[in-house]
Amino acid sequence: MEKKVNESYELAKETYAKIGVDTDSAIEKLGKISVSLHCWQGDDVGGFENPDAVLDGGIMATGNYPGKARTADELRMDLDKALSLIPGTHRLNLHAIYAETGGKKVERDKLGPEHFTNWVNWAKSRGMGLDFNPTCFSHPKAASGFTLSSKDEDIRKFWVEHCIACRKIGEYMGKETGSPCVTNIWIPDGYKDIPIDRKGHREILKKSLDEIFEGKIDKSYNLDSVECKLFGIGSESYVVGSHEFYMGYAVKNKKLLCLDAGHFHPTEVISDKISSVLTFLDEILLHVSRPVRWDSDHVVILNDELIAIAQEIIRGDYLDKIHIGLDFFDASINRLAAWVIGTRCMIKALLLALLEPIEILKKLEDDGNFTERLAMLEELKTMPFGAVWDYYCLRSEVPTGADWLKEVRDYEISVTSKR
Image 1 (cartoon, one colour):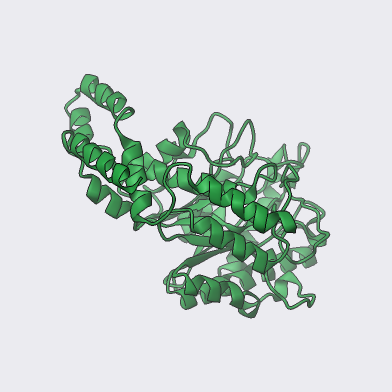
Image 2: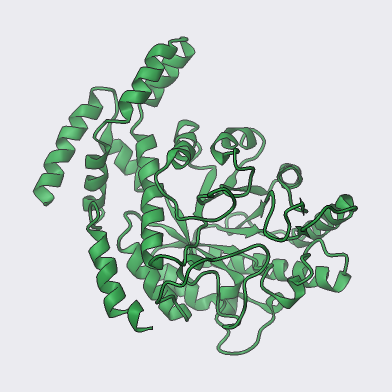
């Protein structure tokens, strides 16, 4: 098999060279790109705060596939297995509800670095960076549908203190791992039906964010991000943290803007927003998901929008400005397989983009030669990309093709089916 992969790669290398693409260089660049895997795919956004907690805030995980992780150790074990099947060195994105408190009740506004020591040690031993998120949902103090924008001062202050604590945790993670932690704030605040006072909640949210970010943290340790949304289940008519709100806040306050693939109108795509927002922002965060009619967080597949997202990153030379994170959760299929499918597809999309003769395509465009531009883009679709991908996997010592599926099946038989 190894011989066949190498032989196929050499043929592909020659084919790409004819259109001015250096496949060796593309692979080298790909190996330096990290994707942030989301811990919540492994346990349906449950976390370890309360085993009986019910998801709220417009978040829904559908399905009941057996074998989900029940503890942090099980989740880390599943992540290790998934990462062994994914080429490259990547990151892990944690939510605050994945704290390890030793069985003690610790309120979210009192969380500290000590509750994430095991995660940090795990990441350091694997040479990985960590990213982080406050968890402003699935909590009694989020039951009203409002957190940082709540008109109840006690509620608002609780969530402000939670987010301040999370920034400090992010700082700790960045210091310990030697890689800046992106700490991303998303809140579910909004109304199911038409509100009278849209302005009031947004003014309160601005006040809360200003208080959260008042403490200065070195950007070499922690990067602050804010995430917009169009609507959610239970907030169909009005979401406080809209795209326009957070775009303005991020530009004014020099924060990262998080673009989530499922958080816009069904006909909108985040690929088209990347170059626009990066005209005014230094960096952004992407949450790559797959909406089907709504923000349904289906497992990422190699579809047109995923390829377009990767193309915008590479064509715009934005690798040092964009943090790529995944955000899907499917409880109807093997959860470990979902991680592998989605992450490998994200990396495949990036490889496809790296295998484009971008300078040639740009020159055709600048010369007004749209005929050849279109013709070349179409010819690229049948280039031997698969041979380059298999070679990259082989070089990275992970399974090629669909061979990883056997390892997932074996792991299910020996580990997850016994939970």
